Length: 131
Image 1 (cartoon, rainbow, N blue to C red):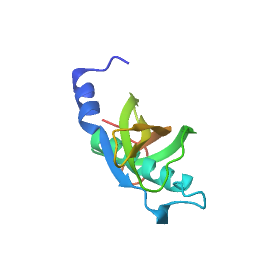
Image 2 (cartoon, rainbow, N blue to C red):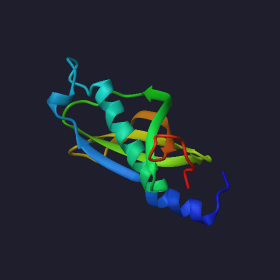
Image 3 (cartoon, rainbow, N blue to C red):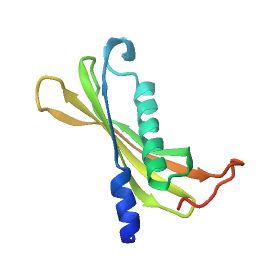
């Protein structure tokens, strides 16, 4: 989309990256990251990204599509990255990807991706303008 320079700058400065180490207490019986934990981390990054973009109270209203493409084994890093991909009047869409990164090599690849729709709310919990 073609957004104003101000919106483009907000998008750029709201990009969010969080690195987590996948420890055994976050894995299932296959020794890979629980899907629910992955979604929790992704929602947190979506929230931070949307809030940094709008500087308003933001809540998750939907998760449009989630693809679990690769398992994320214990003993790896999960690099969770979020970026605003759409700006509406009262909502933004944040694309969040988890890259699985090996600890002792430069190998990394997309493991999970999803699109979160976040809505701005006012003090009464009613939707309001994003910017």
